[in-house]
Length: 260
Image (cartoon, rainbow, N blue to C red; front, side):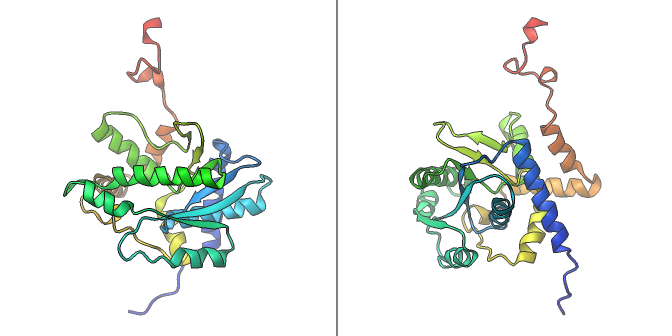
């Protein structure tokens, strides 16, 4: 089959993603003068897109901040170690590759059939925080997007029994760093198209991303099927996360029902 020429308006899509990132940056005051931000780069479509937009606003906004891209080599079998250094060198962005064999530990400690995501995430986060301290960064940028936030919210409702999602910005427990999610308002489908048009050298995850029947994947499918029947349901759910009414929930820690 002959490959047809792309009909995507890359310029229009680029402006859309940049606009949504800037809205998140301003809504949650993600950037300030003097920030040194560690942009966590996994080699996936989301982190490549995040780095692209962050570099754009480093050059065009009136906020004076530094960026350093950091990738964590988790020693997964077949991991192409040369891809990110080559890409980042050509891009001209400061970067650092850190190594830690979390792959072997996670595979050894996780029972057969159980998700590796939780342990992998904790170990990766600890190493990234230590690296941020070594580099003198005060903020870390993660590539989670709007769909990640919605899926996390529903997973917590259905399986965790709590109303909790991914915050666009938070301070770490030790108060040493602020973590930001600049893609919080961006749709995954837009990021997918953008990454394909930009021809990013995607590095697939063969740990968490390769596991079958993950609840997150099931949630993603459920939302996709729901969207086909009721378009824009994801947008409605996302808006609900920005319009909470504590007095109409049941948590006495959020609202003093006894004072009524």
